[in-house]
Image 1: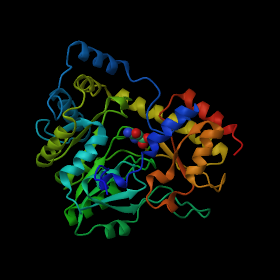
Image 2: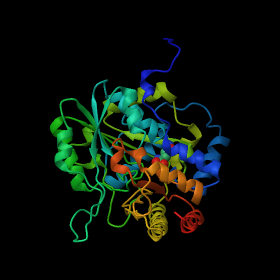
Image 3: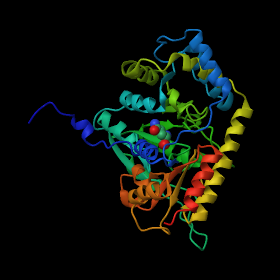
Length: 397
Ligand code: GLN
């Protein structure tokens, strides 16, 4: 057989369904509530800072693990909000998006054959990330709300602590926790994080947390960074970034922090993968992080309002959406509208209603768990959300 072929490593990969749905939406001229990126303007002060940095010729490579201005601003933000003591000189790596942080973190900390625990549904990148490292994903269900007519069950997405405990074993190297969670909108409570933390400590396992939606939480659901729990700072890699907070997903500014020995390893992986995130945009990112509390409360309020516009439109159509506690996605059950599987349903909705979503199965390995769910995002102009509502209302399902 010819050796001029692709590797075994990529043979498992499918194309990202999220990004494929965006291409299909563009082709079909459909309203795109598939891929989670804002269609509204980024803050002027942040854009102006980028223009200034380019004009000032901050246009060359920067220190591979991030400009000092951005690392200092990141450390300051965590000190102010959570009293965390992160050393910008040793503990932070700025990468090309939280996406690169996750791959770099896994490459820096796992060996082939190690197991990495994921809650299912999971953000679709994590499995290919684990495969690229030769690590084995171990899935634990995050179950959908199960409120029955007598009021029993859980009104939230939830995991069974015994099922989680059973997933930890001698080969477990790390657990990935996304909070606020994509695609469900679940915000892990302090109690849930304590359950996970106790298992990490007991089994000497790393927590790798994806906290990219940290500033987008609603009502009583506050974001708790895993690194603030007792005994966890020394075994947590915290990943976040500026994409979602400042509506600049195309800038690819992600960062992570961890104890210096781990951060050093992540920095090396990142250096050889991409060298550095765009220099002038890092300078602007440092300016973005100086925005005051009003900016963040405005962001939350805006997203809560947008969430409610989309929830109302989905309910009106007969979907059963779960109510997000954070992030900007809604998982919606359509079983009262159709018996099709999620991909058939989503593809017909693009064609007939002109509205793009993401089939729920792209977040699951066990496809039977997601047969009647699709994900919508609402990080869009009100006008776009109203158009989406209009598409749904006029659709003869
Ligand atoms: N996080 C976004 C989503 O879930 C997409 C991210 C990406 O495509 N890189 O839709």
